Length: 88
Ligand SMILES: [Zn+2]
Image (cartoon, rainbow, N blue to C red; front, top):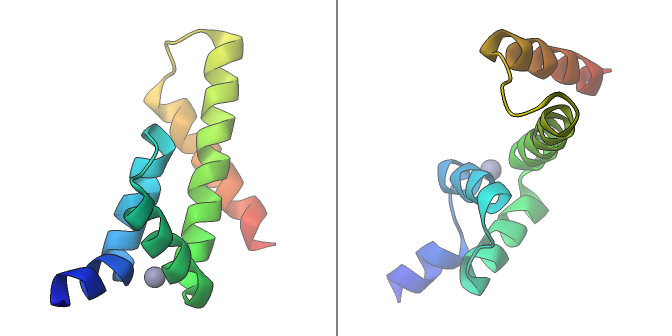
């Protein structure tokens, strides 16, 4: 019982981990529901997910246009730019 509740209502740490994982691979249904449910009431994770999706998309676009070798410093610059843009 407790286990199911735990699965359906992930805490913030779990939700962000699930969100990260979801960018790499599809999540099992229960985890996906749990994540969506958490995002319904948690503003911070919603913002986090939105941000990491945008960063992920930008990085993919960059990698597609410039080849697979992307400097860490370039990644960081992008993340800062995107984070700044989201704050507006
Ligand atoms: Zn949260």
